[in-house]
Length: 330
Image (tube, rainbow, N blue to C red; front, side):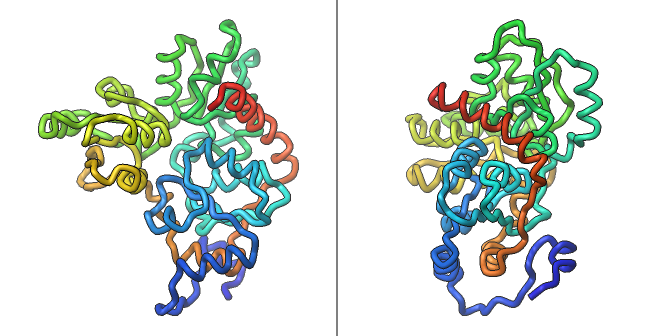
């Protein structure tokens, strides 16, 4: 068993695993023994998606974390997601297979700098995208996800002044959809910022029958040419329900596994990034592996903890989001 210092340094339990073990079977056994639930984001590797009890986007995962009756939550995602689960279920043990699975968007908004930014606009209500630290959520009035950001802003009085952070691209999309004049924090996601409009245009010429679909975290130049813009779940549902047989997908490539499972007769092409890489993987999401998940569940480490003071403050804006979402049927 690794020491706490070793786990902290590496971010995960690093132990020998018998190569003859069927990890799917072993994880299933451990889940039953420990009354654990595995929540996985759509951007996780396909093996993790296949073993998970629930797969979803940030809104669905938040809703699931709030209502689960499991004693333990293993969150196959990134750090802010596991923190959100802890905030919503403070009495449950929350585990993250690799504690160094961070988020470039969350990192782009340090809480101490956001605090100063917020102080410049004392009469503004603060809406933060869920992709941020627990500390940032604790400074917010309402949390949102890409599934409900537009509806949450529309639910507020038209004269309400708003700060929106940390994602400037999602914020710009919300401004366009709602007509509101919001103050935006200048943050972004490394994966969604990397898509190249010129390469996508050439790809569309080669596949004129394909629908081009994009996540609202993409830059405006990409969203302008999209046939459909939506959250991760929105994109998945669009591919299920649209009669088109091929889709160019501008979001993290992990979602394609679920798209292929839901529509095996359709073709899904990852949108090309503006670099030499052929794929659009989030390096943080992909830190989690089936092996790390097994060792995490077996050893009940690494555990994600949030101070009671931050939990008490951060819970209110998340609950406000969940209440508005429930009221709007989201």
